[in-house]
Image (cartoon, rainbow, N blue to C red; front, side):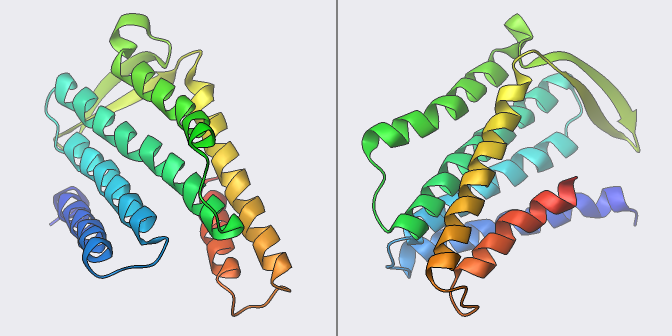
Length: 193
C-alpha cells in the first residue's frame, strides 16, 4: 500500500477526531471558551473534508468545489482563532462591530474564491495535472490573493501578541496556559517557512 492509498484514510481519521471534539465540546464542556473551541474543531473538520474531497476528485469541477469547502473552513477558522485569542487574553466578549470588522475580509475572500471563474482576481490561472492516478492543481495567485495571506499574518500576529502579553502579565509562569498557546501559534508558522 502506497502513500496515496493511505492518505484519504488519514484525512478521514482527522475529520472524525475533529467532529468528536466538536460533539464533546457541545455535550460536556461548560466553560466560556468551549463553544469557540467546538466551532474551531468544526472549521478544521470542514477544511480537512475539503482537502479529502480535493484529493479524491477526478474532474476539475470537483477540485474547485472541494477547494471552496476548504476555504469555508479556513476562513471561519481564522475568525474563530482571532475571537479565541481575544477572549483568552482580555477575558471579555468581542463587540458586535469588532466582530463584523474582523469577519469582513474572510467574507470577501470567500466571495472571491466562489466567483473566481468570472474575474480571476483571486487565482489568475489554474492548471491541472495527474500524478499517481489523482488529479492535482497548481494555482497562480491573482492580484487580490495577497489579501488572504495578509489576513493570516494579521490573525497570527494578533494571537502571538495576545498570548505573549498574557504570559508576560502572568509573570512568565510556565504553569499558565499562555506558553502552550503561544507555542501553538509560533511553531506551525516556523514549520511552514
